[in-house]
Image (cartoon, rainbow, N blue to C red; front, side):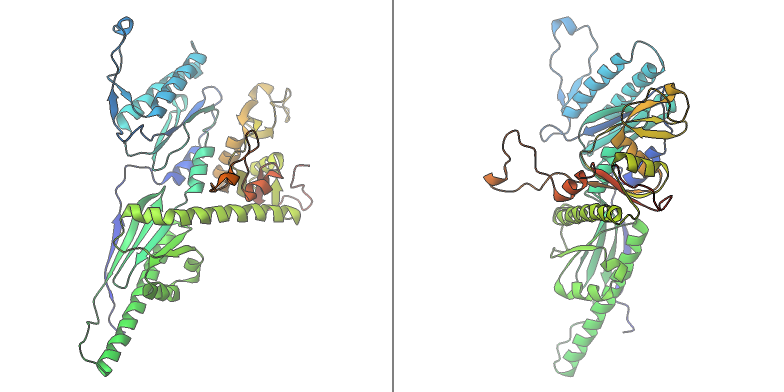
Length: 451
């Protein structure tokens, strides 16, 4: 057909005050130089308000004994703001009354409070802040999803929970189409980010004659739908490749979805995680609500596949490692292609960042490499595993341990009994809750599991 049915193609930018490109921030934070003299503060905040009003409530009248003290004019309705204020005050007091750590933490605490009170947009659902004034670092991230409120202190940023949020909510695309319009929207952190809008012409126009004229109209109409589908498929592939998107949900009627199925490149078809019916005039909120469960299930499936891939690689003596020690060794060597770890993994370890050298367990009394024992510092093993993986360009796959909530009294565990775990997590638990797929092995007979 000579006539191109695509009448208009328009790039769509969804304005947002949120840091939707948090993947690049994660990489940047993982590359920060360690600081053993003055620690990094990593603040995670569930920034959802208490009640429906995200503003601030009037402060209660001061007690007579406190009237002479300066007091802020209002009290945040967000519980996380009050909790982090208490935690920071205790942290500053615990590092006083002098020293480089005390000075750095004091400056960071003031800067964090000022950011939360005056700079953070109330639309944020979650907040991550990495701060170390001694290193000149203050990195705030306003997120579209909540994170558990916590404060971590250490020689490097605590990135496990940020990696968990990004792994749980990967960027995905939603293609919403009919025979006349198509909207491709990229979803980050359950928030529409950017997209492409395509509109077709109304060629061929409906004819009133029957017979040959009607058959010609139907043939031309079918050609137009097929050509429009090819245009949609090309724009979809371009946007997905440029955005690094790993999932696609397709929504539309049977006519256009069938045409799209014939037009999609095989590489795009592999990314489709679901097809559904959705009105072409659906709002952004309706699109996210309808498609988010599909993306979440696809992520659970990928977690299960990653666990099985690690088990198969280790069982075959191929490029896999399991257990904290073997995985940490592989990360130090830059061997890891994919780190696979359960979401409740915790462990203790040590590091000499100057070598660099890392180990599992308590800090040794003697330096394993003959260096200065004073250079050895304790680390949270789960944080260091993620930091090393991200900084070396490895993929991080964090496996959910919780089962979906089931209906009925039979699903409620007995008091005091351990909570049931998802099958992929239970299978990884057999190897200590952590493993890796390797890019290569240093030697053919290298042990790849803790024994």
